[in-house]
Structure formats: C-alpha cells, structure tokens
Image (cartoon, rainbow, N blue to C red):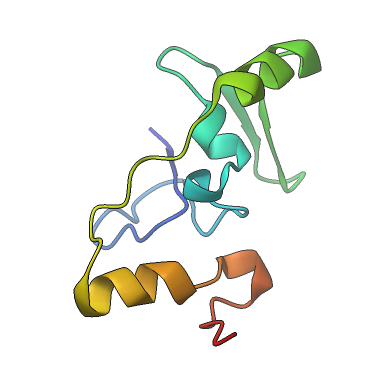
Length: 96
C-alpha cells in the first residue's frame, strides 16, 4: 500500500510514503481531483507520480471542483486557515 498525502501522515510512514504534494487538494491541486478507484502510478526510482487519467478527464473534474466550506469561521483557527500558505510556497503566513 502507498500513502500519498498533502498533509501529515504521522504513524503511517512504513513502505512507500509521499508527503507534501503541492499544491494541496484544498487549493484545487491534483490530489483534490482524484476519486475512489483512480489508479496512481508511483515510480520511486524515476521520482515520478502520475494518475492514469487523461488531461480531458482532469479538465472536466477541474470544472466541477469546489472547495470545501471552512470548518472554522471565527477565532484563531479561522485566522490561521485564512492566512496559511501551501507547502509549495513555503507554508508561511501571509499578513497582507
């Protein structure tokens, strides 16, 4: 079994693990377009990860993708969620 995630996988790091794939699913990244049953090819020596879907299939899924509603809308966690950037941009807080 392989674990591919855009989050933490503490305790799940036996075997093939691929973490911090960016941009994250919550931002409309490719992981967010995957559906149950999709086949993912992992080539560890070749350092590549690919889903067996055509660009047309991915484009169709992108058209209907919607972000999940915010879990927290007030308080410190809501502020953090609104300000945190993804791992591919340094995972820092934007203050502007």
